[in-house]
Image (cartoon, one colour):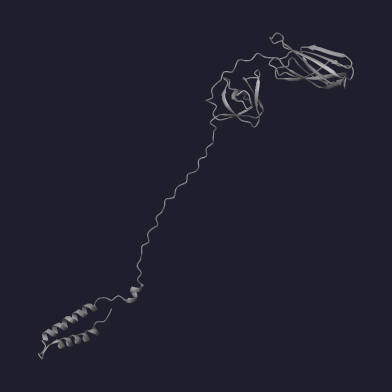
Length: 289
């Protein structure tokens, strides 16, 4: 704040002098006028001097405060856990843990037209009324569809809506078997062994076996309603029937000499007595022990 007392006197003098100089002629100045002017001047000066002065350095140091604008927050999306879905095939599929035949009908009496192997997969089209066979797309060329046994099967997909197919009529059983030389055995004497495989549709319940040594014309034969195998001197095995799909080794009657390296011929006849008019089938095997 400025002190006004030191400035009042000089300013008053200057005012009076100014008024004196401004008077024209030689007439004496009006004292009332001069006093009034001086008083007005002093009042004005005093009024100005009473206003607080703002220091220059204060003006330089005052910094306006700027209210900071809060940042605009962008909402962060909440990530929901990703759902894991198990893909289920629309078309039911089947695979097997053991190679399985595929047949024209649900059963061993039907002809085989293909096979599903381990590691393969095929489409399921239907099922039989019992639910133990599946009607599938044939994995092998030829007939388009076939019946697969479900014993060793693994299913994938919805099988509840599959249609139920009526199996075709059961075919008339056809007898068939395979015979092959299986070896020469001995204990008291020697005998040849023949391996039989029933790959037909009926069971065989009787057998006749005739073996001829073509080098010596020696013949041994047997007719029996039992299938028997001699295994050395102490063991033997037998059964009353050779069922469809089974295999078994039968022994010939005994030779009293060693027929090794002789040319031999075995004639085997298997018969069924299951009501198919005693159907019989004969096979011939030639071999050299």
